[in-house]
Structure formats: structure tokens, C-alpha cells
Image 1 (cartoon, rainbow, N blue to C red):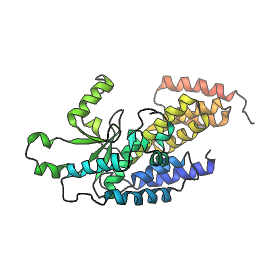
Image 2: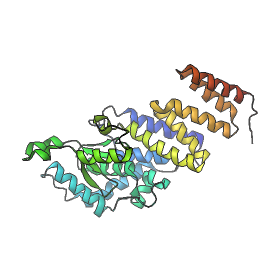
Image 3: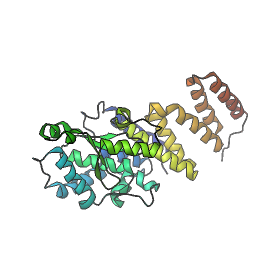
Image 4: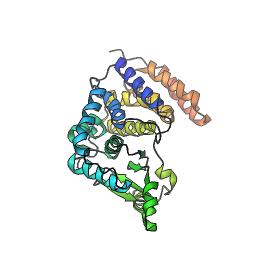
Length: 299
């Protein structure tokens, strides 16, 4: 299990990585490295640099015949064939919530993952051949968009081929049209989430980390793995500003379950200060007073 000082250093390394990326469509960032830093939260001895270099070298034979003079669409289809057949990556449909699907080092060994980790692998393939691509925060199922689609549109002879398209690295490693994405969203959400630009927005690496950590939070909460839930909530609170208040609130109650009331009080006070709802503050202050009356568990 990760020690407090190692946790702090790993979070600092992730924060430094994220700070360097202002625009994910223009700035160069390594998706495998990003995934490996998240993995290091679970595997403290993981050598991130060595893992990244090893995978990068392993791609060279499979990418040697990359069709540089073909259209962006054809190049993407080539990469999907490499991803699916030469490298053998596939979605883990049999055990989707296996925690190993969320850790990049495990994904590279098992060749199985969930949409977001497999999308990071496909992004790395694009990066290796200098094909610009970005992650897409599609609700419920992370996607990839190759960004130079305008080049294909210039060559297109049919109006229909001008549509945007996206890559699903999980379900068969295939290309999806806008209509495919719309149909999926309507099926998954029963119309609760409208289809539009917001559903297909490009994800900053910070949002990718947030999504990965939230996946892990759900798994560890279900398993009642309090120790791992602690480092997930700590990472969320320090790396993802949008998640900070809720993560601190959850961590306060987690500390209380562990009998660590001093830490719970500290987190809850921070949450109360940031709360804009008077009703919510009153409720949390009552809980705070209860925590203050409890005896710290020291063993």
C-alpha cells in the first residue's frame, strides 16, 4: 500500500504533468505516462519512465508500415487494425469492473481494459505516428477523435463523408459516426442527456484523471476498501478542482469511519467554508459537532 510520503510525491508528479498541458489539442502530452502515474498510486514501486519507454519501443514493429500518404480516415483504420489485431487490445466485457482495467501497467500486460484506458492506448498509437488526436468525454463511454478530419473533408466527394467521426477503442475498436454517437447516448441515458457539442467535448488530461479516479472510487466504495478509497479521494481533492469539495466531504466521513476524527474535522471545516448553501452548512455543522465529541482511535 502506498505510504503517505510516496502518495504526496506521486500526486505532485501528476500535478506537474497536468500543469504543462494548457490545450490538449496543441500541447504534446504522453497518454501512457498519464495512465502510469495513476497506476503508481496503486503500485508505488512502478518505474513510470521505464514502462513508458518499453511500450513505446514495442510499438515500432507494428507501426513500420503506417500509410503516411493515405487519408486520415485510412490511417486511423490502419491504427485500429494494429490496436485490435497486431497488439491484441480489447474491451474487458466479461469483467468490466475488474480494477486492473483501470491501471495502465495492468492494461498493457493483460491487453484488456475499459474505454478510458484503452482510449489512452489508442491515443499513444496516434502520437507515435504524429497523428493528432484527443480524448472525448462522451457520457458513459470515453471516445477518441482524430483531429485532422478536415483534411479528409477536402478530399471527400460525397456529402455524407463530411461528417465527423470518432473512435471507440472498447467495443471492437471501430469508428463511430455522429449518428452512432447520438443513438448510443439516447440508448444509455433514455434521453436524459441531450446530444450536442457538450456530449462530445475534448477532454483535458485533468478531466481524464478525474474520470479514472472516479471509476476507482466507485469500485473501492463498493468493495469497502477504505485504505484505497482514501488515496483516491486524496488524489481527487488535490488534482481535480471540480471534485475537491465533494472529495473532501467523502474523505471526512471516511476518516470518521476509521476513527480518525481530527482529520475528519479538518476536512469537514474546509467543506463548510466552501458551502454556499445555508441549509447544507447547518447540516454539516451538526455533524462537525458530533465529530468533535468523539474519541480519536489511536491503535
